Image (tube, rainbow, N blue to C red; front, side, top):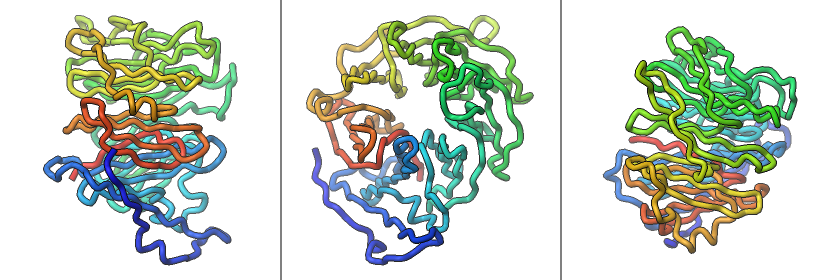
Length: 379
């Protein structure tokens, strides 16, 4: 592991009160990474959203810059001292699109839109039980469970909300399956993984296909129960993961969708020996891990050329021993460095591990509670 030194920002010398009654502004703390990549990459850094345990209102935002090597924690509170309750309850997704940073705060039922350079709030968009983001042209798309947080066999169908990225207002809503999760855009269609996670044992098992020009669901693809993550590769295929059922009698697995002769995506193959808690695609490799409730984790690579698992794990044994509960996963688009977040015990600070493509650790950083998703930024 590389060396670090702690740095409190100069602003930490100032104690001030915001408009929040009897609350003191939270000053971000930073650490500087001594050894970090050269500046020839187009990637300038990244944001990381920390979920915070449900009900604790401890969602926070971290930021890292490759130019300075500075990793800053909890920057939203300092950048927005006039916002009551700070970022909110359960940060579920994050993305950079154009000059804006979007943060989905699930249990606060909102999408925060921030300036990507300063993290100052530009808008708050109210969307019930919102989950994940996707973008295309002038629009952002947000999946929503619609109903209240919690299991309900009579819960309503979910929906996708369309947001105009200029006016930052909701312009349309499309009904999809139960408890929709991740989405992606491919060839004028929006694909939505439906979970049905509020309706066990009667889970949803479909991917909704939305025609973007009309913004209507044109059909559903039957895949497997309790779908979650959705990724696209460079060969025109889609990859979707299933969580399986709660009891474990139906395990987590990975599924591949391919276009048929008419160009419609259909289920082409299942990978029952590839359990997925999270996954990321970089080049011709699909990286994945599966974490059990007991804290045991399996790390693997699926080669996308021959569709066969590679023999090695992408995490060195000594790093695996240090990670208590793997949670988030991302790959640097240019260097191939692998980022794994560790939620630890879910109620205190987690960690972010940066690994070389060979699996060895480059550096490790303390984060907020339940570090979840990374959004890379470009120069």
